Image (tube, rainbow, N blue to C red; front, side):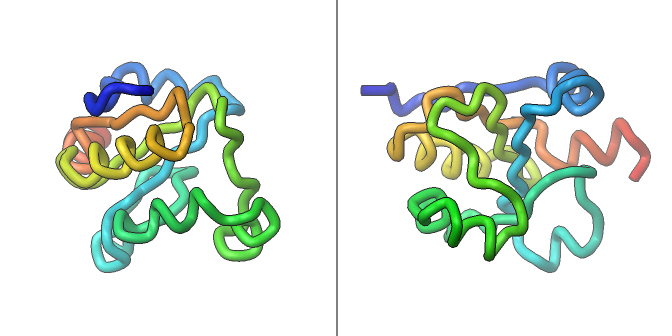
Amino acid sequence: MASSVAKEISYEDLKALLGKSENLFLVDVRSKEEVDKGRIQGSVHIPVDTVEAALAMAPDQFKAKYGVNKPLLDAPELVFHCMMGMRGKTATTKAYELGYVNARNFTGGYKEWSEKNGK
């Protein structure tokens, strides 16, 4: 059983993955209001209170709702983020509990991302 301590990913590692990886599955767990003000390009919006239900969906339901293929349980680069890290940690822990063994939380969140990218 995975520990309750969520694995983390740094800004530098995430930026590198965004630049080179086709496997990155980046989930923005903030509210719609927050996402409407700015988001990390390529992220999928799944609010934190719906993450568990979303990851428990059948793949065809997930694709119909979110427009992308549902990540596999062993997806190598599954990353969650919120504004400053707390909701991302909650979502990452939920993903672990559902069997997503490589889920990670971008602890700096959109706050760090926007500060370093000027958006």
